[in-house]
Each structure stands twice: as C-alpha cells, then as structure tokens.
Figure 1 (cartoon, one colour):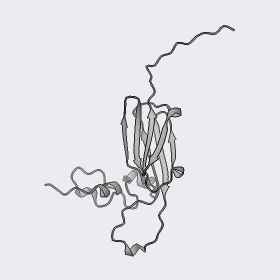
Figure 2 (cartoon, helix red, strand yellow):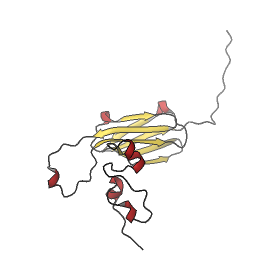
Figure 3 (cartoon, helix red, strand yellow):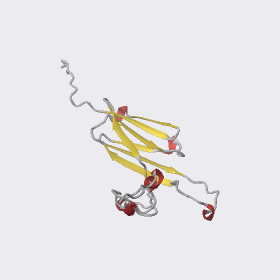
Figure 4 (tube, one colour):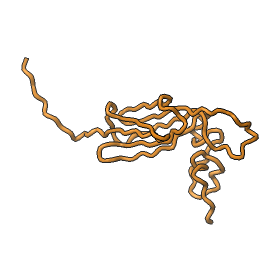
Length: 154
C-alpha cells in the first residue's frame, strides 16, 4: 500500500486530505493553513510559521521563512524558555479569485511559539533577516558557570 506523498507546499499549507496519506499527522482544518484542528479553533484567522530549531555548542538557533514581511512588522517575544514570532503578510489583490489556477501562498497574520529545550540569555539574543529568512540566535545560559564574589568592607 504505497500511496503518493504530498508535495512540500501541500504539507506546509495543509492542502489536501491528510487522512489519505500513510503516517500523516492529524487532519487540518480548512481556512487555517498549517494549523492543527485544535489551534485553528482558537484563532481561525492566524497561520502557523514552520520553523527549524537546532543548537550549536553555545546557542539555540531558530530559523523561519518570513518572505514578504518587513522586519519592522515582525514581533519577536523571548523569555528564558520560550520564543514567540508574530507578524502579518499582506496580499495586494490584483487578480479576481476566479482567475486563479492555483492559490497556495498564505496571506494574513501568523505566529509561532516554541518552547525551548533549555534556558537562554534573553538580553544577548539576536535576530537577523536576509532574503526572507529570519534567524534568531539565543545564547544558552551556562548553569555550571561559577564566579568568585569578593566581599567589600564598608
């Protein structure tokens, strides 16, 4: 029973009936590309950003595609154990809906909250965007780091 796999864009945007594919994740709600049914019920107007999260020896790095969004229109909130990226991609409607052959790009507001695998230094975090790729570098907190504290005499 070898069924054809969905394309990257179908998986990204939640298109098609996922139930017909082997090993497919839970079925997605229509009207909220990339959102599971539970999340779609909470805010049907908001899309979910796909992300890559990985670590280097000293940082946790989060990457996501934000093409078509100006950096000043992104809202990034960081705590010691969580990152939330929010924004909006506005569509300029130059084409009548009936004239589309394919309409797969996501337009509108989006967000993604990621629980981090370890605590990070919020004050040393950096974010950069180049060619639509947002990279957030979150330096890890070194819990084993020690320092000597000198006692002052008053």
